Length: 241
Image 1 (cartoon, rainbow, N blue to C red):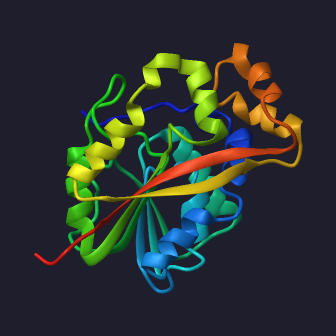
Image 2: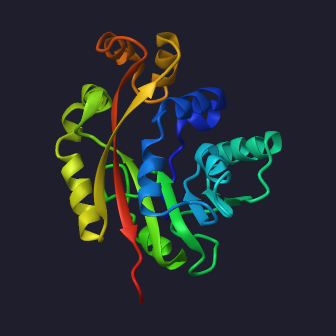
């Protein structure tokens, strides 16, 4: 049974677009990817591509981008993005991580960002071993998989999660890191930010992520128009068969 999560941003494209623009505004994740493999001329598969925000940007560099997404609300946003700014080298595909409709050894790079289903089996998610095997299948020898996750131990965003969900998050970061280490991934901790143009803008976007009753408490916990945020990026390289 594929993991499928109906994220509120699927039904609120304006806020979801705003949220994507706020997270990692300085492109630290892209810097890490480029330190492993330059994207110019490469074939990239974006799994759990959402609205296509990142896939569309990758298409400016890559030879071809395949954006994989199962959720109808997100697919509509991707098709609208293509309609408004068509990228001929971007293919939108309705599909699941556990059953990627692409041939073997097609991708130089596989990217998944904040795709909750790529992680260990926990309270609300199943394990993602089938998805990882699919990524290995579609990767070329020497290709890379960049699995970009929230970090639950560092930065203000992690504090907001703890405030919202308390002890349910105890030990979750170590569980995730141990899982991916066991799967042959290397872990990078990336320090970045959420940054908006105004506090009102940030507050609106936080409603996509956190319970209504604690939003004011979160806003009172930081000043200005940005707060610290960390990614855990798990990197896998496909070695020779």
